[in-house]
Length: 401
Image (cartoon, rainbow, N blue to C red; front, side):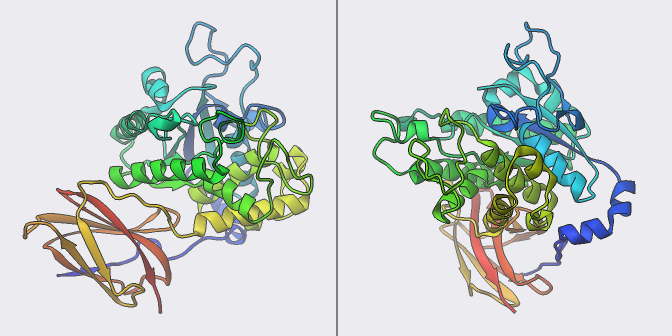
């Protein structure tokens, strides 16, 4: 059967276009975004820790010490961190974003579900970013607990959509840790930093594909690895190359000012669809943080490249249907064959997403063979996600003209 795909969003707005429409953006409805996480979100050290805090809302600021969400004793000021940098970007781009942060050092999404649900599940959020504790998405033999990550990210997503059905929920894919890689006896000892990065990527993508209701994974950790492989950033922060950026702080865990800046750039592009390269060499947050124009431009380029790159290392859930998609690349139509299922398979939900994780279109159909129309879909790389009663499967496709 034929699936006509009519694009819902066939264009991308550049920073210049937003700037030219600045008056309209100011007058438009405000976008309310909540960042949920820990020190990988709020930042651990100056200058990122409290950066631009006055321009955002730290919902945990000023809570009594008896409250489990209260700031640590040495961090009594309001947090800025990655959300503060993100807010500065949106202001410069002429966007009307009301930014909130709910972050508690060292905590997991399980903690936030237990202690902050009244904030996270309140109505009115347009976008919510969920950042898991840095090791929980790793395999059990590396000290992680993927099942708890999947369970509580899903519970939070369900709570958010229960209160705000149209909210876009994002997963914040975090970075690999040198302290778990380079010291003898550490969890990834003897392996390259890429190994932990790949484990994290697999977990976040598995969560994204299995759940089916997240807007996207913001590939922050992958952007860090891209900066390393592009020789922009140093690989081993224990023996840093002075000619390169060091994305990690001296504790070998948290982000340096450059790491926080790159993280915010990825999230900015992922959430707003504004090309981070349009921020340019004179971008204000970089100046405030003491980041050189050359480094700012290099990191903007890395963020752009990562967010627009094809999805990799996708893990198909065990229960998902086997799928053959052809031709690929395609021009006007795809044939999708769902095998290993009893025909008819019932309802099939087909969703076409761009590489920002944004939905281009969704369509219901039935049968084990589908004809997917691509008329009007812009050339590029997409993710075709197919959901049946048997599970979810995704395939990367390329549209050519």
